[in-house]
Length: 73
Picture 1 (tube, rainbow, N blue to C red):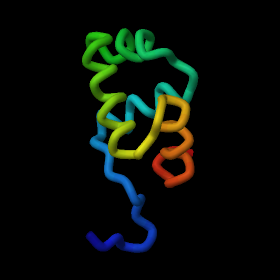
Picture 2: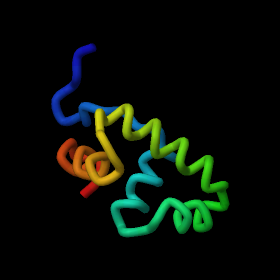
Picture 3: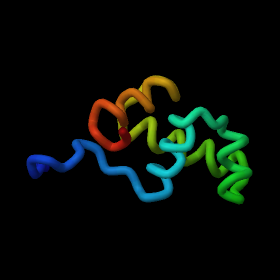
């Protein structure tokens, strides 16, 4: 797959990106789930998918990958 210059190398859904941003701002998975009105398990599922898409080993690495790729600032 070719990437257009200026586009992020990874594609997260809007919800995945929203959750990554919340976690990057310091919220826990539980706090993010309460804020979004989702179950903790659902948010954990989004985190897992985001980690896989970003090739991250853990949550901190996921946030670093998102920052390094320009998905979040």
